Length: 429
Ligand code: ZN
Image (cartoon, rainbow, N blue to C red):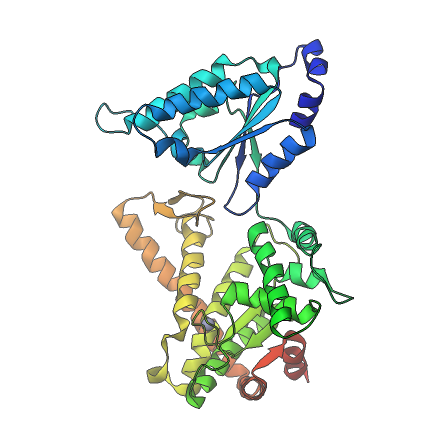
């Protein structure tokens, strides 16, 4: 809004002596619409829009990158007021090598030229530079100094309200059956980016066409959420009766452990229809509302829920017959347990000491240990302890509710897909 207003009425700002930021950095994970936002600013302000990707600069011959930067700014100056947008600025804006050896001369030349141009152009003239990145921590500090990209706009993954609004925008050109409840779809897609939400709406439309209907229904949308998250249904996949039974107990194990800890419906849907992603079963968990904070208890409950699938297999089929089906659960549970100790300060032994640093906040969030080898060994044994305790808790819950486990698994086996309400009805009667 500020940039748009400035481009409309630069005199208002000049009169008071205010300088608008020359550069605005849009920071956020992939697929959140940073490019769209930049275009929207240009469109809203009614000024020309110059767009280039950072990688285009580096792919060129030596010396060409810098020349292209000069060229870009020359054009922009002629067309001012205007907006220059550099996508993936990290491709040229990476931290320069401080050592004398190595480094990418071409990239550094390009970056130096960019810095020189930014310092050179007149802030009152109405050239606003926008840039996008999902790796802000890798940028050269010189780029972020005042007078350069000193304004940072986070473009985060959409929240519940945002997701609903985005879904409705993408549904504008789609024929819908009356009475679509977008709230349900928005709640089931926590963590999805704008691009993924667009994909969900499109998948639903494709499904309606496939089935020879003229409009998209609620169930098309719900099915396409699963398609995008878990892969399409594999109706003709051959799964033996024995495997089906194991999957049913495994999935009910997760759901039952979750339900007994929270005393509320923890899932919206459980299914044992195999998906093309390779998953044989799948429990769709939905957090009520958007959670920014998680308590220690909630994390421990979550870890126990992850172990619930394997715990059910052990209880019903015996220790020797446990399967590889829990590999993803194991990964998730371990990640959470480790984070509790190294990042959230939730262990007695290490108190509030950071033992890990997160590298790429927006790209998976890889963490690297920042502690002595001795400490790392202790962390490992605490992670094992945490997961073990949660696993035992899950086993105990299932043991105490074994009749319900049998009843629910049999019901799921017969129906193949059950809703959260059906699950709770059986659990509570
Ligand atoms: Zn599982």
